[in-house]
Length: 369
Image (cartoon, rainbow, N blue to C red):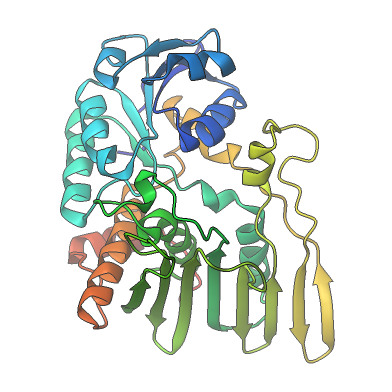
């Protein structure tokens, strides 16, 4: 799919339609789109026109995606809706001739994911999954340090998104429905970053639990990915009030800790616009431990605008975009393997074909060796 461009040189801004104006659409997608030169947010599909117009009075509001995609002037559709609707809505948009960015996870299982990628290929349109956390300061800081050999060869890697939300809320993420639960909500972030660092794992061992009173679906996940003798621990939890580091890495030459998470989500929630002074600036330094003692390394700034900058460039014919299709498919494979492992109490392998594994390896450089 990479390299297919719709926007002719000199044709003006890429016109964007956003589907959904809940948390993801309002807090992440709309501000990021507006902050990227060459993109113009012109329409939103939402049942709450008043909420949209309170923030974006000039944007056209449609009640449904079906109404919005009849607009021939819209080039790119962003799908930011509940997980179980990602694939069906993306399919509609692709078949209507639109390029698509879809929130993670972009499907509920591998079969649905493969089918959606086939639809995109048949429609000759791009489908990109919103793996925006590749441009988080915490991840970029750890990635830079590992690539520089700060800890030598990595033997143990921990990545955690822990929160303290003791009260179960009535929202789709916390309901017992397809695509709900912490593993499908936070897991894709943790998985995508890990795959970018280490490539495809040998096996997946997962444990999921419902720890809060009244929890209807998993709100705790502990997943171990195996890479030979290396171990990667991914964790998400809703009953962690403190004392949990975002990243911990041990290697043959030392260790490092990144305590606090990337600030961009907090900045967006506080009303900061992407690109304003201080945007993505992370004051929580990496702490490195080695034979010579302890030292601090300044954090690398984050900037999730980069995702949409790469989308805009690809639609102008200037690159393949931010996320390769096989990378999105591999995230789905790990999600599915984790769910299977937790359900059956076994170590699961990724259900990728030989051709898919070969596609992953083509031109990909990781720290797996």
